[in-house]
Image (cartoon, rainbow, N blue to C red; front, side, top):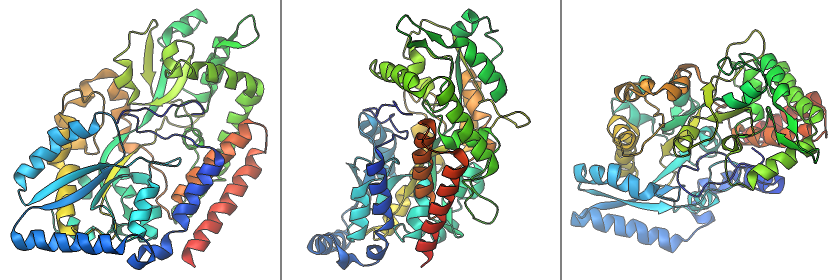
Length: 466
């Protein structure tokens, strides 16, 4: 993750780390906007808001189509593809609604936009936004999102239409604030060629973390300059976040009573294990290797110099484009001894920001794009590749399980973990990234660091309730 690049295209939709100062700024921005969410007069251009409302009324009175503003976070060819494959069909079926697409760049460690926060606080938000699903709890707690419960109940849409964990991310305090759209999860990619060269059976990837450690050790190799020419495994590379590793160790991030549990004993073991790699293989030398890989502007795994890496199904789309000079495979991530292999899912949703001037029309759009018809239209587009939809029935209809490598990820979806739905969800994510960095650089004991995270998120929750 330390060297993951921000991709220019819309497929570059995964998490990117920023310096700690930027992370804290993002957290403070989210935490500080609650008082302004409910009062349009607290910021923004009131004249612009009034003019927009007047134009909306004039459009309805004249019988002209209502235009809704849809904010999305991806550059590249996404806009053209989504317009042609989904929006054009929606507008044809809904001649009274037009959709204006507006690209708004994301900021922070998560796929959230300061501009969106500012627009909501100023009373002049877009009507619809494509939104990182795990942030819904944080933003709903601040009053930044429209409660869609009544709309959903009146539409015939069921929670059973979506994967259980994905639906859970859209619900905060028994109210629905979004519809899921698109998902992904994590598995382990392994280099069969490096395994064979190390005397390992390339057709028997590690099944447990203990086996992974043993196999990885045999693949590490240094060049004449005493720097690594190839590595077996780096726990924090690509999607190897503390979140990922904690679940692989049998840890948990919340209990059954909505309490956050970052210092769960297994989470502590996971962080200590990550720090152990940094110490054993020298974090400076590992960083030097990662930096060299970063200069190739390629995913480190594609270089053929990494034995094992945890990454997402979206990587299959890119691997299909390259002619790699080594054999590779993909399998579920190994788990600690005595635990089953697991994964965790992220992804997107459609929300109606609080203060939308076209709430009903916005809902019609959300209902279309994030339910069966729109989901299928997008999933059937040319070059859809190895994307997984949020709807199991659509995935079955598309026969995605017949794609061998994708099946590894698809089979894990029904039991995939998702991050806690909590007012402190974004803070918890940022905190885990902070202490992960400290631990691997030898700047703190795993137990003490995660006890500190627990203290900080509990304080954040207490502040939210005041």
